[in-house]
Length: 169
Image 1 (cartoon, helix red, strand yellow):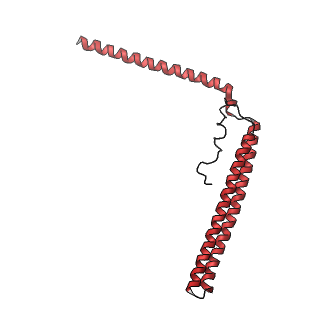
Image 2 (image 1 turned 60 degrees about the vertical axis):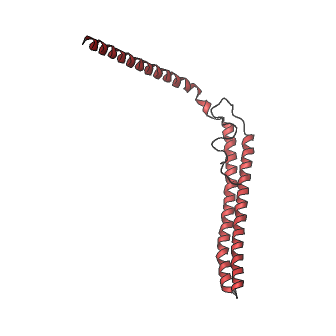
Image 3 (image 1 turned 45 degrees about the vertical axis):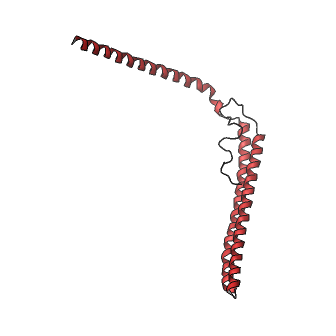
């Protein structure tokens, strides 16, 4: 019976000792984190890029996006024209054809004209968009550099505002 009591007391002491060790480790970690937070306030500007870089990059972004918007407006105008012309051409094919052979040829021509217009509009849009991204990359490289030790440094152009990888060219 005494052995059970002594082993229970020994086990209890070990648990209390382990618990005290965990508590003291947690307190030490909390104090260390607090000290790190106080020291990190001294380097708040490390994450902020220089103003000259920011202004240069924002200007490059505005030029890029204006170019893409203009390309989109041109594309959408071309598509409106294609979708407006297609039903008129199909209607003309059905009403003015004198034979089935002429009607089939006119319907095929209407669809070919629509597909060609759509293809040309898409290619023009993609080329313009690609050119806008290339101009942006060149403009971005011309901006003042960010020191590599700064957390604002993004690896030389592979950051948040980089070209999407899925872009079709």
